[in-house]
Image (spheres, rainbow, N blue to C red):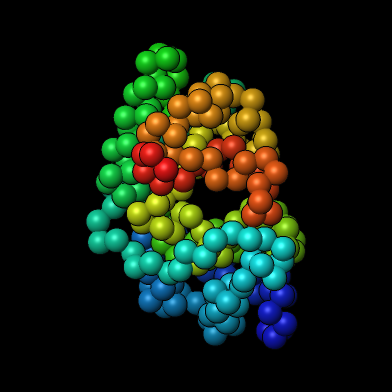
Length: 235
């Protein structure tokens, strides 16, 4: 494996993702995955890949996301299941979402308020809490599939575990989705044109959720209108 800390081998990433998919089919992958469990699935080269990602510092790539650290995985997490959206009339289901109880409670209160204004719609959560080990998987997925191994581009989209707001159990970020399937991998920017986004911009702070990566943010992250971090009310 290349020892350059700014280079991650494409072949090793493919092998890593193949290993993850194999273990996903065996039911061994979820968002509460621990490093000890991940380690058992990987070859030595894949373990070195994980080490490289853990040692990445976004500042070396012009990104100033705050350091969060590697928090312990909570022993208890709520699991949000059976969320559905429709694309071209076809129902699709969101995979199980893991979320701390208090944050889910605040989200449900916010969703009820949204539905009061838009009775035929509702807010969905596409992703919430991700353990540091599962965030490694997310980072490799985007780095390999969307950015062809370009860390400088990928790190503006998916953060390494110690810098990701999804890995904080007390201040978890939620990726919001609407019932029309937006945002999608191919229509990420369309969420900013939805009624959900406009409502969140006006009301989400009242429920403790804040848009992290606004247009032109000082951190160097690309805008993510669907990404809302729980910081608590009156922040």
